[in-house]
Length: 102
Image: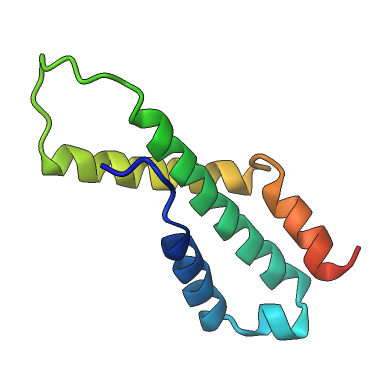
């Protein structure tokens, strides 16, 4: 597996989210900007979890399959969303300040 973060994937996810709620970028609705910033932060945190999980060696005691990998990815995604909504790492706050001009 390639250990680099796929920036194209991150941008496409954020762009698709913004396209759904297009008002956030144009109208500067603070609630929408906050929601989009938290979603971006969640994606960023999920990528961090993914990279951190790669550092854990597979001991081979219990074989893991595709279902296990998918479950772990979903678990990481949900944990990242919860982390972002509870304040996260501060990325969403910095993005909101910059986007809203505060």
